[in-house]
Amino acid sequence: MQLIDTHVHINFAVFQQELEAVRARWQEAGVVRLIHSCVEPSEFPSIQALADQFPELFFAVGLHPLDAEKWTSETEKQIGVLASSDRRVVAIGEIGLDFYKAENNQQQKQVFEAQLNVAHQLDMPVIIHCRDAASVLRDMVREFSKKTAVPVRGVMHCWGGTPEETQWFLDLGFHISFSGIVTFKNAIQIQESARMVPSDRLLIETDCPFLAPVPKRGKRNEPSFVRYVAECVAQLRGVSLETLAAQTTQNACDLFGISVEEQVILPFPHNEVSLRHNS
Image 1 (cartoon, rainbow, N blue to C red):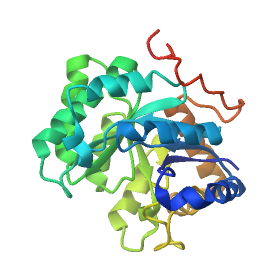
Image 2: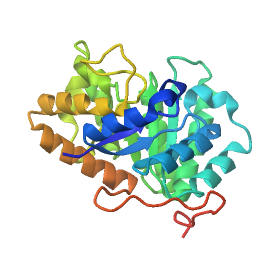
Image 3: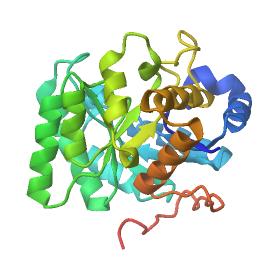
Image 4: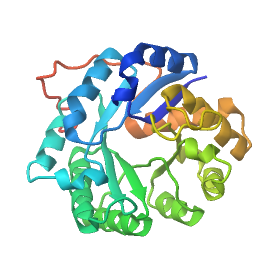
């Protein structure tokens, strides 16, 4: 059985003293690929170094909505250059809107649209963070797709929306990714959303080190715990763990353009720019 954790932050300091042990546990749990998200472009070298250390790790680059105030006139160009500099970059993210923890709504919207533009220019999927902003984000994606005449591809990560909101993003063509929250006893609407997502749009993640699933709730989360998310979602959907694992692994490969069958690719030298997304 093979699993893909589609959203991790293992560059955080809480992992630094035991990364090899953390890796041994994710390998034991069947995790064969990981997608490392990015909070701000300054993280890129540390994430790139992790991908050098762990060849099963692919990654994204972007600016988180809660860091929107760090956006400058050069940031959009910087993200595009970084995304084109390493063929292990598979997405722009995490980007989006968070109206729960911040009130700079207009600034967040401008930064989000600019990063949608980077993804469009590079023909890459996006990893979207959305909290208390579903209707605004839906409308922005809809308008952007209309303007560019190309649907935005991507995933609503660590999804916590209602079934109605889930349908909005399914209608826009998005994948939906569930984290440890889906295992929480009171996450009734999220569990209902997990039942309704079509099999070919379903993803799983940890969002580690945050939101450890039951039975590890309250502990530091790590990629091996994605198996608990898979077990819960499989039970909710009335399928076997093996079926759920195969579905979500294939979906992650399709969205991010990766494979579990081939050997992982070697990095380019870090001063060499890939033309993968520009040809």
